[in-house]
Structure formats: C-alpha cells, structure tokens
Length: 204
Image 1 (cartoon, rainbow, N blue to C red):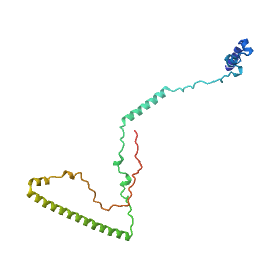
Image 2 (tube, rainbow, N blue to C red):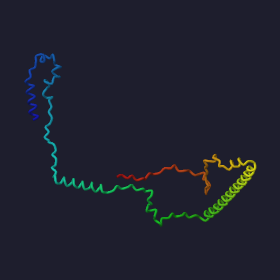
Image 3 (cartoon, one colour):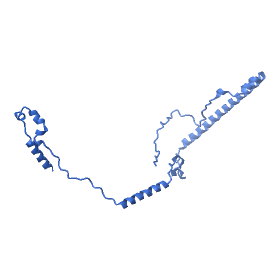
Image 4 (cartoon, helix red, strand yellow):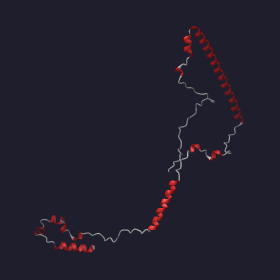
C-alpha cells in the first residue's frame, strides 16, 4: 500500500505546471519552501504494520461463576471470624523467665575481698545507728523545748496558745530525700537513656 501511495504522489507532482517566473529563478526560495515542488526523494513513508489488537482469551462462564462463588464463601468466613485483639506484651511473662532453673551465678570473691566487705558493712551499720540516735535525741530536745514554750505561752495568753496549736501552712509543699542505704558515688556517670525500640507493629 505504501508503494502505491508513493507512485500516486509522484504522478500528481509531475502533472503540476511550473510558471515561467519560477523557471527564470526569480522565486527560487519559494520553490524550495513550497511543499508542492519538494523533490521526490524527500518523501518518506512508514513501514507497513501488519498487526492486530490482542484477542482476549475466552473464559468459560461456568468457571468464572465457580470462582465468584468461592470468593463469596471466603468473604463470608472472614465476616464470621471475630477481630483479633492486639496482645499487650507487657502483661505477658516470657517463657524463658518462668524457668525455675534460670539463676544468675554469683561472682566468687576472694577471702580478703569478702572480709573487707564484711568489715565495711559493720562500719556502715554503726555509722547509721549513731546517725539515727543523734536524730532521735535532737527530736526529743526539740519536742521538750516546744512543750515548755507552750506551757509558758498558755500562762500568758489563752488566745496565743490556741493560735500556736494551729498548723502552719507555710510548711507545705514539703520535700525530703532519703534515706539511702549507701553513700552517693561521686564518679558515677548516668547513662544517656538510649534504647532500641523492638515494639511489634500489628496490622489488621
């Protein structure tokens, strides 16, 4: 078909009459630009495409109906199954931690190290006992002084005595630290708080 089209165009171009002005060369630029006087060699034709659209495969209507029925049955089963709740792993004790034979091996200390720790524990116990006795003595002295002051105040004025028995609101908020079993370690470096997030993500 492409060959017949090219031959037809050649015949049309050959039959065109060229004016004298074009032959004399006055409008040479117009001849090169006009599509009617383009040389035959510049004509291009595309290659013939002998193709057709892809044919669809014929599907058996019975087979298609069976597939639809199976899909409907699966959807019904999924609708009957209740939704699964996401487990809270913080409330579940791992099986590895429930093993009774799982024990941490204690480090073996030398005789000098164990003896030194025992002496240090005794000294620390004596120090805490002395500290406790001094605190209790200071509290008893303060309470005895308070009682004497209240007795003297009661003799002077009953109104001032009743006002002194009322709680002081300026004592609150009250903050207190301790007691600690061991003295603070000055060379201790607190961790930065970095951790690896291993939380599982559940999708429904």
